[in-house]
View 1 (cartoon, rainbow, N blue to C red):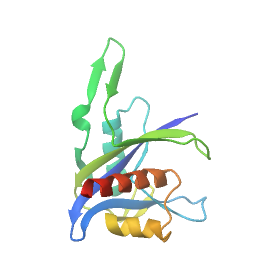
View 2 (view 1 turned 135 degrees about the horizontal axis):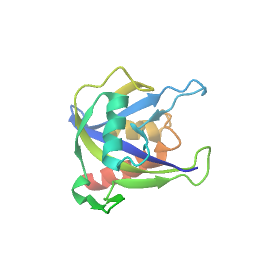
View 3 (view 1 turned 90 degrees about the vertical axis):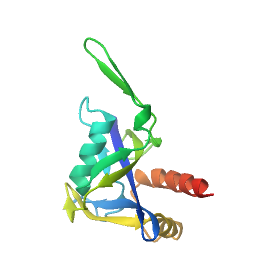
View 4 (view 1 turned 60 degrees about the vertical axis):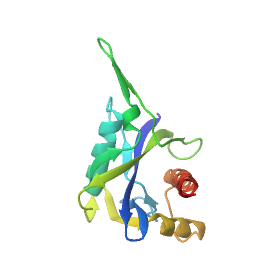
Length: 163
């Protein structure tokens, strides 16, 4: 079985530049708990946008206010079917590992305050992008195997955009 996921790269302007939200997932069956981005599996026939908003709120307490790329969304409706197409920030596919999944990353902005613990999440926090880049470069932070490529893709884009 293949799982379809949505992931949020939630950005804000902080005192030290652009910050994003990272969190740890509470998994009692794992020895270590790496950081990850908010998001998760879509429910059956749930749209990308609705799933993203639901997952972010459940895990962080935040309410998404802007999804970059949402303006590209097109929905088609037929008698017994609906299909949506849009341009996400990035997509991923696992090509090996414990879970067969694919998903989309969306850059977002949100309102509200972070909760201490969300639905299966803890240590939810804003981190400056430059600090996260440094921690990853020096291998001082452990990121989930699924989200590591997505966050590295984001960092590559982020620093290219700053030039």
